[in-house]
Amino acid sequence: MVSDIPAPPGVDITRPSVARVYDYMLGGKDNFAVDRQAAEAALRITPDGPEAARANRAFLGRVVHHLVAEAGIRQFLDIGSGLPTQGNVHQIAQRVAADAHVVYVDSDPMVLAHGRALLADNRTTAVANADVRQPRSILDHPDVHGLIDFDQPVGLLLLGILHHLADDEKPGDIAASLYAGLAPGSYVAISHFHDPGEAHPEESRSAREVERIFNQTMGTGRWRTHDEILAYFAGLELVEPGIVPMAEWRPEPGTAPGPRNSIHHTLIGGLARKP
Ligand code: SAM
Image (cartoon, rainbow, N blue to C red; front, top):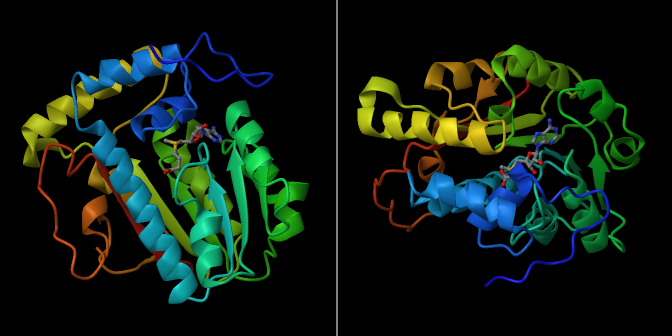
């Protein structure tokens, strides 16, 4: 029997939340019975879901390290940041450049409560409550402006969030509105649930089944094709190796490529530069 942490004020524990289900997948403790039930329903279809979540976090780590160490980026806007976990953006960035600024943005009240507790004494990192569906509210947010200078290049992270927007919410337009607020030389990283289609019919069937379960339990989740995901990078220059499964994006030198198991294609993504 797992004993739950107390729910912060404003947190609804009668319905699963994306942030808490993801936390469960990553082996975290910031989740409740309703989240674990939703996660377990998906895991019955794709038991190696936690590995996909870890691959996504590892992608985040490599992207942020690359941007700080190789591209000279010193400020990050991490939208749909999720609950604090191991290897948060500010920890990775500030290990390389102690002066790096990071703002986390999320709409989940639990993320806000835990993020603020973690960052109470940190002057270079903040967490803001905003909804990506209102991109202007993010670009104009006082907590964002307090740390991000939009005249300088920014590392914008949209990891695991655009797939929580329905087609009629126009994720491509939302992403483009965010890019419009960034200085040339900024970078955008995206990771996204992927339906590999006929190239991998078994994985494609699982994707559709998990999509159905996500929508039943959490009311969100859209597995998109490579071309649909590519469209989110419109107007940007993709950095090598382009849009690939998480494990294939610039793996650490000397690491084994890992097994091409059922979740290899579950999340794909890439990094691009604003010219
Ligand atoms: N970016 C982290 C990562 O890739 O490891 C966390 C991804 S988690 C799967 C998705 C996050 O997006 C959750 O924390 C959720 O609360 C947040 N989210 C979902 N819809 C959102 C919205 N409309 N506006 C802001 N955040 C949102």
